[in-house]
Length: 335
Image 1 (cartoon, rainbow, N blue to C red):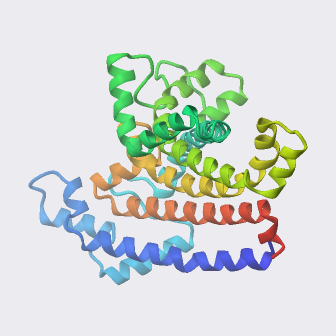
Image 2: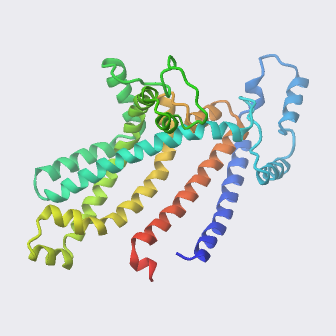
Image 3: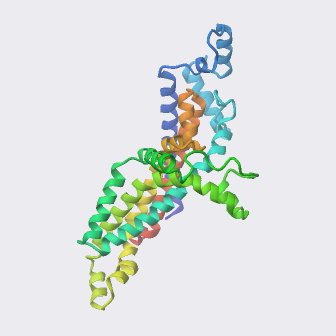
């Protein structure tokens, strides 16, 4: 992959981000609802309302507000939250590590399970294990992640309380974190009791996010393996007396991983978006929960900052997916 290609892709991302920023900014200001009215007590004087609107720049024309926001963006500022009264950048940076750890855990779980199920379905093709994998995959994909979360809360949090269903860690534990990456920091510092609490709180939301993705990965891997098993080099390996398990693992899997890895990257972007509802259900203090709170409070600067952050993540992940695809596929790399 050439440097010119990377530069071209980065330049193409600029109008995309610009379009997202403009659309979100305008839509938030034309929909009904006044954020100032939601933060002041009933019966407040008109002068107080006007003063607050002027403080947050909401008394200006939309075009002037947009230009002022773009000026802040160029300086690395997203403005100040109306409801939380803190810089939006600080709020996002404080919550994003929790979402990233949760998403990575869900992705790792989905990848491991999807690989095992896809390999099992391909190995026992035409037999009952394949039918079982197909049935489980259909069930996992039919139920959305937030509904899995609600079922887990009811089953494993209320009826059979074996795992925590809210928060990020046990509040009774002593904590002295230097970063917001609680799990990574606790593991690096050898605080395994603290890491265990963090993992216990992460299990249910991570599994809820991972199940639909696991099903998608298992299906695409099974299909890719079936296509690979019909190639000439597989027939040659069979003629040489290699067993089916060795052929699958050593020869077929290498080619089947190309579409699977591509799908994994694409699904990871959707997984990040899925954290919004799952985090809210489990009261998980990530950027998704922050986004829901911002919408409820009609916090315009915070909503704009969160949406723009997600757009940046999606663009960066898509670029990483393209790079990975080119590295894994020699035909594209040398084409």
